[in-house]
Length: 201
Image (cartoon, rainbow, N blue to C red; front, side, top):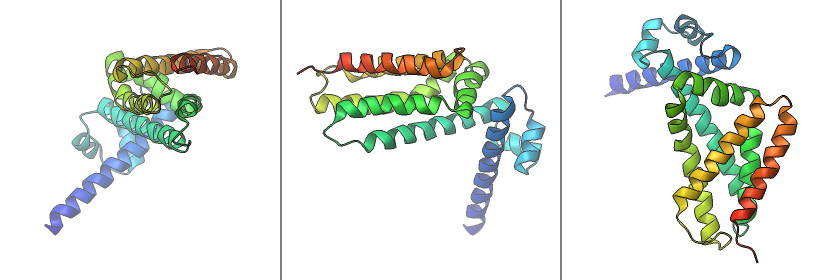
């Protein structure tokens, strides 16, 4: 049993090292600019060990992308959770700002908004991203409905609508000639969208 645990620990350590090394390299030079030999060297493992853990560079990139998406979801979730439980309207606005702040970071922009759709293809990029984003937004919408600040309605359609708006807003800002101004513009638009979904007194 001890030998099995030790092997499992070694496998986990190898995987962690590969994802960490690949993430740094992909952030610096993008998916196409990095080879598997370089990733393996940076991780301190053999190329064979890389292919033992992942089918290839694409699957390793997918693991990096999932890691980043999970971190972003955790960050946004923490900021939203810090809002008073009885102020769900504010929580929705805080979630918008937290997403825009994260997506404005150069490393996130490159990995999530530029490299991921190009490397993974639009369908898989959306599938992975929404696995994290939709669940987070669904929780916020459910909370808003329960608090009475949003009308009772099916949660999934609203969550998908909001996730789509958030993703497109981030893409628009990332590709704009003046990203800071574009971010301010989409922030205002997203806040207006959220306000339009809230129950008016």
